[in-house]
Image (cartoon, rainbow, N blue to C red; front, side):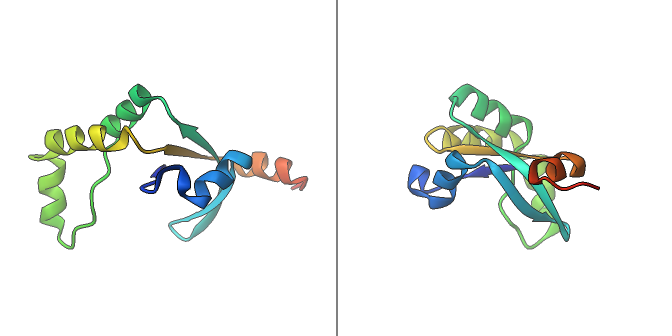
Length: 107
């Protein structure tokens, strides 16, 4: 999962991740644990958004279809420029056993 701070380093959630990169998030009704990594290298940020571009919310399926096909190159171009001055955070889910071990829990 990629997160982009539109407020830059002023965002408190981003400052908190610097102190403790362990996170919990909800996805598809599941509460998951993970580790956040702040990515500051512009080349790496551009590569991540180019490989897996996100799309703005749209109310119709056909809008997403157009964004993913016809306008994908334009969208990737814009995203690569937009993400450069902003902190990018990559969150990687942990396996349950890893998360339990970090919390001192046993199965």
